[in-house]
Length: 155
Picture 1 (cartoon, rainbow, N blue to C red):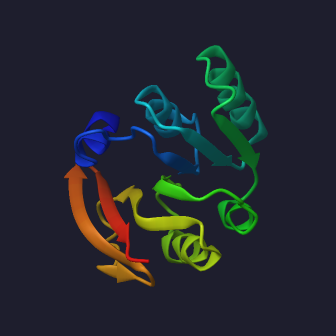
Picture 2: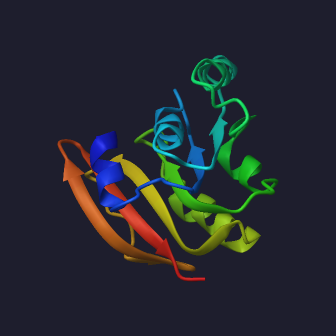
């Protein structure tokens, strides 16, 4: 799945990008982005044990100076972010549907650079809107029970 996500980004993929990995879990998306040349990654995860594991992985992989982990609920953390991002990935539990709220907060906060890609991983049974304030859907793909919806920030 990660390979498919990065191929969707086209040539250069994550190269030089500032990445936000929401609902990070193991941090796989952000860590993969760093390994593919992302300049910076921030991870947001509620579970303390998972946060410790992501911090350890950053250090073990030599990315300690290129990333930071925030512990807390995505909506609360997004309100206090200071960096700007051009690639955002959100993979909340499939029973949740926080996309409009959290993506709206990112747009309102000014944390997205023009043309930023915002990627939502979710159940294929959930169809996300064609547009959200400031965001326009540019791609949607199915992988088994999973769907990936990609938005572009129009700001």
